Length: 111
Length: 113
View (cartoon, one colour):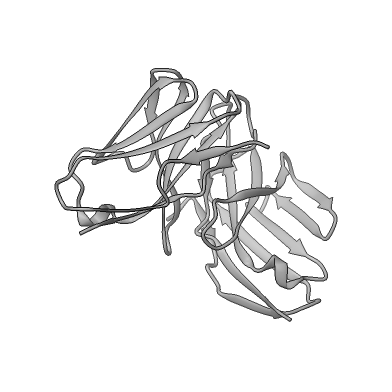
């Protein structure tokens, strides 16, 4: 079993839709949880970061962590064509900052 | 503007060649990482370094080595390239500390023929 599971998609939605992206994990030692966004032919960029269970909001993006269920989510409200990218969840523990990544979900927002 | 620069965007090498992938960061970060990214497998950590001349194996170090002689530069070496090392290679750097942001380079698409 992989430490981090993520549905690879692809996921296609119309502009303005609410998007839900999810990851599950098996290692209860993970302490921090991140979402990276990767546009085609680019390196990943940090989108959201959370340290504990609960919600964190930044503009149209909300990250949710449920440690009891080992489940994290990223919600995108009012999705735009510019949100079309691969979204990678990542998680880690300790100070070395070694991250374990999900496989990534390819999202396409249709105008 | 923070920057992680990888020396090549695209490389084609022959089986058995020794291959060097170079990465430079200008943020004075202690940590540097090499990942490979493959469809369906996501990003997998090959090696990371938390200080000059210090290195640790990641999840898939076989067939690779690394060198970090200066803080800003981290090199990935394929000792004898094989076709199963055809992949996208991504370098990243971060400050020391739990959950600090990792900044990625643009990636090197390596094809071994």
